[in-house]
Image 1 (spheres, rainbow, N blue to C red):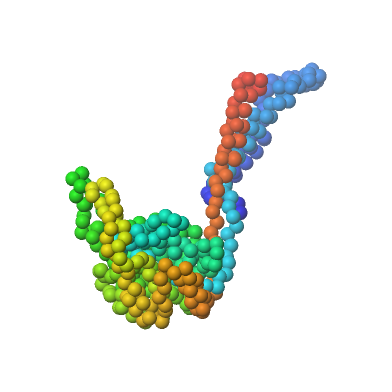
Image 2: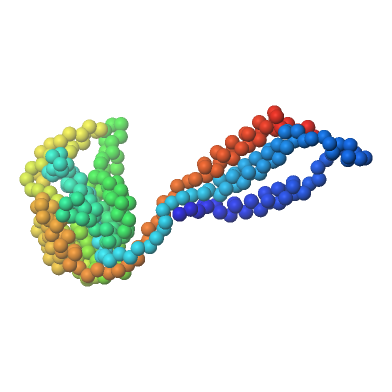
Length: 353
């Protein structure tokens, strides 16, 4: 697909055309002879025959410059495609307890948040095995600690959604030059967990969707430590609007390596960690959904199977075009033509007026 970003600048071609016409109609200045028969036998030299070249180069260069400043662009065709899917809101826990390093991915120990992200990626784009991704679903991402952030609204652009997912980080304390935590109250609030508020925020995101089936997938360790709503109240809000909340447990119980910060230095120490499965199970039961444990190999496949049973709605998605700038392919030749014209006008085709 080809377009001009500033297409209105192409109107400059009109005055350029008038200048060219005026030049062609302009009478040349010459020497008057009484009898032209006396000079008719004088042949034209090669220079005289080539004098039309500099003006042609000038007007060609000006035309290319006008095209260049109009910003020609090329991109893929923009098209609309119909999908048959459901609306899903992912609620991802990023509280302090998600720092526990009690998971392994490809033999490398990772914290709970990274495990939750990988679980999310496998669900959305697939893992190359049994999980094929959710290409037809409208998906939103919300991250929550003590506060709830909408990282991405409902969208069918899953590649962008995954990039936004990667930007979610665990709360980190900031230290001043005396190794004192800057704004400790804010850090402590961000480190808490507001599951009920996260569910309510996800419900608000899904309410505006026209798709019939709407679900929330909550990935958390299940320990609520703050929030205006309790997990049960959040589940009741979802149930009121007919939205199912599938809960996926992230984490274990017992001891796990936990990062500890001392100024700008960080080390790990063994700390007791917990997984509040009862809360997650209760949320799922209140909304007629199911609870899953991410440590079981079939957990995501079971979530897939459950969501695939839901009623789907056909909707029209729009794929936007990504354009590449092409002005340089017109600007560079224009500059070259101007340089060639200047060279000819100052050397072999120089005219003294």
